[in-house]
Length: 223
Length: 164
Image (cartoon, rainbow over all chains, first blue to last red; front, side):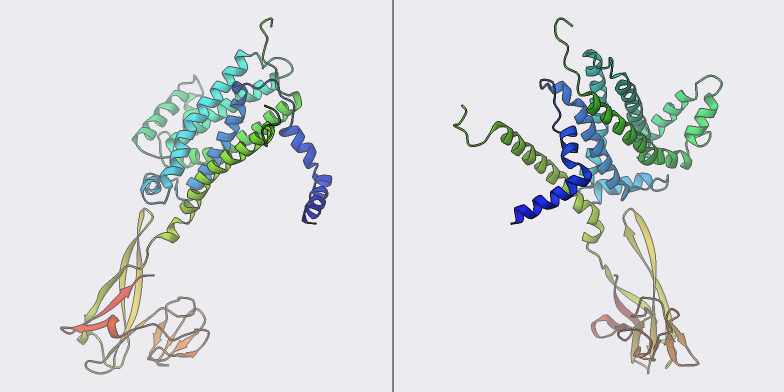
């Protein structure tokens, strides 16, 4: 009797949402012969979700102000139950994500999976790599320790070396001529709002294209 | 060998994925809950004897407000909280100490000399000289420091104060 009830409830939703079609399109689609190199995209997606969740948790205690940023992170590490774990995952996950995304790109390049009709998937993937690096760059400043401060000083100075518009870019990035409170809050804003929204949007299109085209088969010897 | 196993390859993969996924989810999910509610798990309520001043500071029959500041570390920041009590000296050695915190919603009450009542500025609650409720919404009289929580040593009035 319960089984029938659940079946009816599921059927009601399925009829309106197309759950079965969604399931087939996302999780039950035909794949070329299994290969571990083909899992790097899913691994990147998993890391994105993991970074998103741990990042949201970190904002519960982190305070993006020069007066409090360092102390609030010290508090997360020593004062909050399992704070070390949440920040540890976010810290190491960040490096891992850059690596996994990069290896994912290499694999697509080596197996020539970027070719017709998947050029757009590749281009969006390039955007995803750049935004991921942007996440790494903006996140690096947030602990507001010596390493963060000087790494960002150097990083923004490199951006400032662009001819003609360099000074404008530098000031726009730093929110002034030197690193200051504005730098920290705009890097924070970029790190938790602007870049993640871009990532999520691009990932959506990337996934849509993958589902639409299916995965490319590995090239044979003759290819 | 087909048929010799009770579980199909597909079902095994499903089960393994669910088990491993569940384990990873729990390993991160359970600590996350502790992480979120951490401030509620901290042991609170520091206590200490607070000296309010020598007896001769307090006029007989008239409540005198004594304020004191307690610092507390919240997270990574030290915050100062101000507290107040009314000291009422009824006779030479008979002292009553009443908290100025309204028992309704924690506003600070003031002593009104003319009406001889404590008046809460938030909802016009009134309390008698002894802290009994005369009118308004408070559920109980003003908190008192008495017995174990009150001492007079060498002419100095002190209360045993617990934060929280």
